[in-house]
Image (cartoon, rainbow over all chains, first blue to last red; front, side):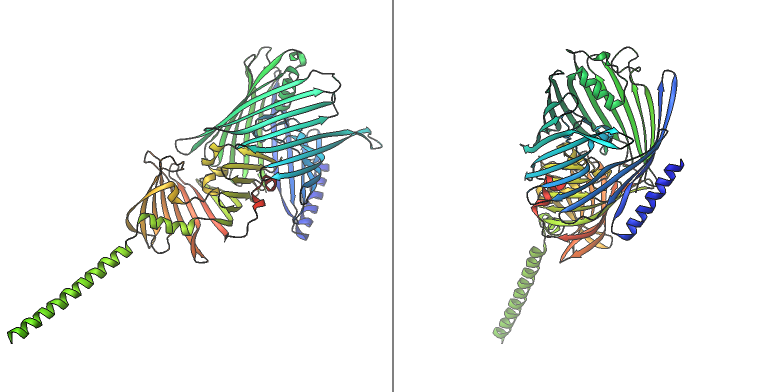
Length: 366
Length: 258
């Protein structure tokens, strides 16, 4: 642990101890260590990350709530502190508003969410940093199951790092209307993004039950205002199902098919698997069918195995992420996972594009 | 003289007969008053254990071969609706809303609200031996099972009725058959054996502690032992309970969940 990190830790510890002693503020969070080995071109790279996540549970009044959640990460590159949450939420008679750094997530239960405010993937509990943004969020409830959410996300750019000069770039805005019709969760989302080719994105998602199965679907339509890029359409259809075998062993299955353009598929794969998929796969008229599947099996109350598969139906290549989780004595979570691609050739999910990786993670919640 | 004697004998016989009739009638009457049916027993149990509305602070201790995991929660329920929030460090802020037949979950990190598929209702909640249905629903037993009184037996120094419950055809239940020991005096289920349709014993639940709240008895410490795995059990401890509190309907909304 370097000097800078030690000072930061000590400083934080002093603040936290004095806070907890002086007020009814409760402290919680996680401390963990993550080691990652990536095997690429007959060589292996080892990455070690220590992380401390602190959540302050500040007593809330009837109408006001403050949330503080920050993360300190230390690895070979250096020490990085980020606020995941630092916002105030206030409730009024007909609406509530929250201002500050906060998560904006429009999930509906899919593994990959093409209709999120920022692209999101819910796979294997990965918390996507893109979800935490500086924003003002209004929520207007209509009845117990319906409401409208409006998000304004102003963005700044650093124009002079030395003078710390900032320039206002614009505001990304979004609106989500959500309700339930015939026990189906239905949402209609619209996002105006003034950055990256200025585009409008309209999305529709629904989730409900079809007999013993969970069924969900989403459609996204993206249009560039400047007409600099092609319009983008994404279709998603998914199912989930759970079964108890041998009376008490639970198995859960979720699978979905996503039809999307080559541009989007590269963007998705890069975010989901941190892959090196080259732009050669981009082709104006080519569309891909991706399959995302997840099977989890609880071995007992303390341990489970999970398999996440992301495959390209067009060329039958896929990447598999097996994961084993165990809660060790002392409330420590152990997670071992790996990502491996099947194809050696010049296919989408080839070993060339997705290097073999092995990950060990130990986490303690307090 | 003979006439007088005969009259006396006749009077004595009449008195004895009348006395016998009265005694027999009393015995018969008391028998019919005291004979209790299986349905009456389970209804009396429901009077104690069925919750119309309540606020409960509870703890689940999950044990598996010496390893232990504790989950703490606050649950607010009214009729068919329930709201549960977990408060232990690992799950702090995870919330569930059950409104009618729909189950919603709030993920605290991303502050996401997601509708949970119906098939999950019979699965163990947060890795425990209690299903979402067990924790979030209080259903009258008579609506789900047909009962038969099997006899009486002493259990933990208390005389109990033994009932056998078989699922009503067409009803979705977690266990097809139950054998229940109901305290004869307090009408609390002290022990339950839970069976699959095949007849296999799956779980045994035993009440270790009962408290009296405003004239009703309620189990406050229950151990559910998983008979399919050795040394595996979930202990459910009610730390605080308030029956029929004032509950604002706004608790059971998606707005409150997030």
